[in-house]
Length: 111
Ligand SMILES: [Zn+2]
Ligand SMILES: [Zn+2]
Ligand SMILES: [Zn+2]
Image 1 (cartoon, rainbow, N blue to C red):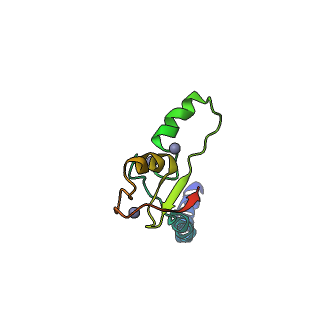
Image 2: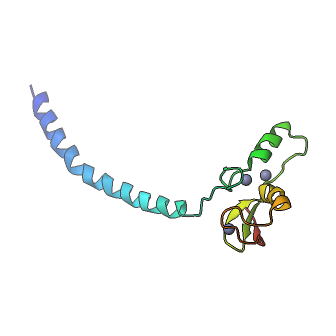
Image 3: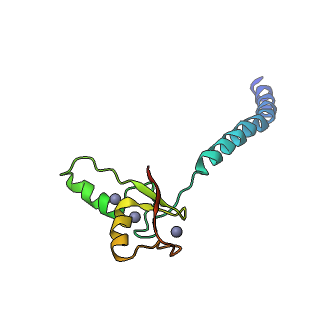
């Protein structure tokens, strides 16, 4: 009966290898944290993340009659960001940033 001997040897071996694996996992997490650090703001007007399409565009894309319609993001001088669609409707009634009430002027647009 040599099977019993083999089993006890195996257990000791795998225990020694575990700490090594933990180290590689920790390194990976640090890298993931970095890319997550990109600003992930929410549009204060429709409450959808600005990197996603706004509520209106999400609804309209279901019809698909205009083909692909990109929902761009605008940043104001105050560094707040919103969907361009939401903001262009907002400024018709109130030309101020909905978050900080500064006069709204576009700093840049894009994705
Ligand atoms: Zn929006
Ligand atoms: Zn939109
Ligand atoms: Zn603002």
